[in-house]
Image 1 (cartoon, one colour):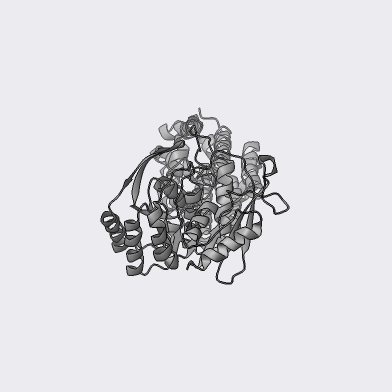
Image 2: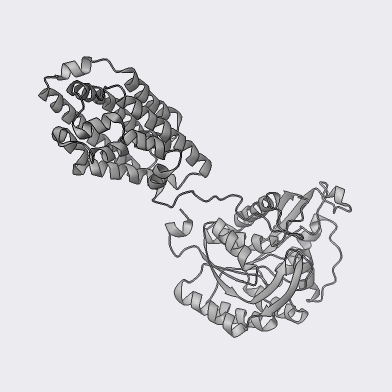
Length: 500
């Protein structure tokens, strides 16, 4: 479940970008936030370079911004390539009009491939109009120098980490509340001096400076990679997403730096030039739609044959057509009662392992139904002359013991959801089987088509659905194996009794 789903309206972002919108939207989605966009320019580019830039008229971009604010006012705005002085002026007016408090400004001026993305005449407008409105400014070293050179400063090359801190201090004097100077263009040796050869590149240092004037150094190991296309916009978007989720600025920036570092290390290697990073290194796609886990599970190629064998077992079919020997049915009732004792214990354990009152209460409802089911078993056994003393004195069949101990073992060794999955074949299976059973056994069948059992099945499914979406694909695969094994144990339970 995304953060946006949990509290609608709190964590939206608006991103003003050109083709970097694709990267921004990936980053924002990967952080569980919702992106709304306004396009400033279109580029014809690939990993090898920028072929052309088409400016979107500023008045049209303003209409996009207005459309967003009229509907879903964003909590954070993140900008990238703005393209022109006119667009910068339009954006400044919009920021003031909408009283935007958190602007993450990525001053995109030069692409990773070296292409000039912001005309020189627009730099002064960006510095004068936008920097005073900026919450976090995220320039790399060339962009920092360009902003300060435009301000009349004479700057030398970065030689030490302290030089990055000086850049941050000078930039913060221009108005931003926070400045993050990215050090990727000047990797350092471990002693804090700039590397003068590729072999010496060991550490990348980003420097964050805020209102207290105390610089924070964020160090990352240098990664020798050509897959750095879009790292700047990805970092700024990650910062914006983290801020929108309520993180403090230092934490938001540090987490974003770690996100980009991992994205570079796990980059897929696309393209002939500077390839993109891996935006989804820390996320995954569930193999099922939320709320449809059980449906997906029962239709899996490795589950479906086992499930079909279970609900269409000869014992079940014999119950359905009335040909099941009475002695088999009596034996089944007794062994099923003994099984239900442990089934109740397992469900009680599930309630104990639950982490919230909603799941505890749901487990208690299932246990309550099991108690009702056991009483009905006893009453039905009495109709055959089998008293309670005889039921309790009956030895568990090996198949019953194996099945119940497997479920309880899962309950002890696996997490809460693993236990629920081990219980699921019994809970779900009886609901499916009861629909096809013969009227000769109607008083007993009524228990499994009655409203309380239907409700118990629904409660169990809701428990599973609510929690399945919180697990990774690898965990889901483990749960599938548990379900298959538990279903096979159910089949073994049927096979205790002759069906003809």
